[in-house]
Each structure stands twice: as C-alpha cells, then as structure tokens.
Image (cartoon, rainbow, N blue to C red; front, side):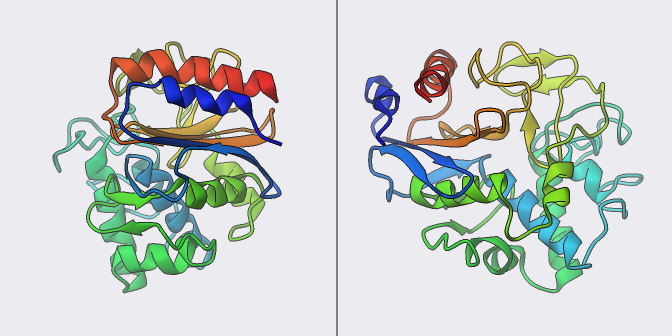
Length: 271
C-alpha cells in the first residue's frame, strides 16, 4: 500500500523533506522522499529522551517522583514541563506543578539526572536503552537531550511502531506517558500561543482539544507526539491506529503552521 497523501510534502517550501506512516505491528503503509536522509530533529529529540527515562524507571535506576531539577521538582515535573524552569535558561520562573513552562533546560537537567543515576553518559544510555534495541542505527545524540538528536524517517518509523506496541517497556508505563500529567495546567505551546489547558504526558504532547494545533482537525483528542523547530514532527493517533513522521531541513514557521494540519488530515482521510 502506498499513501498518495504523503506526496503533499512535494508542495512544502523546503529544500528536503521525507515522510512515512506506520502501524503498530511495524507495517509501513507508505513513505515519500529520502527516508534514509539524516535530519536534525530539534525538539523531536525529547520523546526519545523521555523514552530512555522510562526505561531507566523500569530498570529501577530512577523513580518518577524522586527529586530532580530545581527545589521541589521531580523527574515527573521535568518530563511534563512543569518544573518551573525557564525555556532555555537554567533559572526558576515558577513553583513546580503550577504552570506548563515548556523547557529545554528541564530536559537538559533530566539528562544530567539520568547520567548520574545510571553512571552512563546520557547519549550512550540513550543508545543502549532505546536506539540499539530498536535498530535505530542512523540516529545519534551529541549535545542537548532536549534538541540535538539527528535521525531518519526510517528510524523514527521504528520508534513510532514501538510507541504503539511497546516491546522495550511495559504497556502500562507507556500508557502513563500518554496520560495528562497535572491536569488543568495552563501554558504556552511554542509556535501556537497560550493554551488552557496545555496538556502534556511524560515527554509527549497530548492534543486533546487544543486549537490552534500542528496536527489535523480530524486528529483524535488522544493523538500524542512532538514537533521540532527544525521543521520536524512525529505523531501517533491511537484511534486511527497509525503513527506519522515528517522531517524537513527548513526551520518551523508560518509555512509549517499552514502545511502540516491539511497534510495530517489528508493522511487520516486516505486511511
């Protein structure tokens, strides 16, 4: 099966783009573009980092509610962007749990916490815990666990299949990660403004009823995933039973705000 809707990426005003759709059993329903091309992920790095943190949790290296980050904050707060840390600075701007302050600094502190707990540098732990077991051989992290991953559509389709039918984690752990943490929390969704509530799970944004949003108008409220400032996204729609990845080499901007939702709607309609 080849999804014609994926060819819509040809119309995107980007130098290079690649996309694919996968089911829970790993069946790739279609791809378009150079699926082996390595793209900077920007914040699509965060779901990979979060998954490694959940492996560390299941291995007993950390607990989700143990202290991590600024005073009063926990691993759970860092994963859910409620630690109170600023966006890109390691300074506290709110008490933990009160606001959804999207924070690269929080994920960097999470990476440091995991490195101390496992006694393994975080990029190496990510490889051992997630990338190697899933065969994501073209994916790497050198730098910030918040934004410095590099990967391919082929590799991220493997990850998207894992998110739908977990092999590395207990399905209950993954279900928790896709459940809203600190319900009713307000905050700004980068690129889309203030959202009330601004729902997140553990490292994954949850669509719910957010508007505007980078997924489609036909995306189910249970859709979860992440997008990146490098013009990248990954979503899973549990109701549709598929995951979708799109990677580009043009920074997120008005072009993406306009192009991504109709693309997602076209993919879902064709399914």
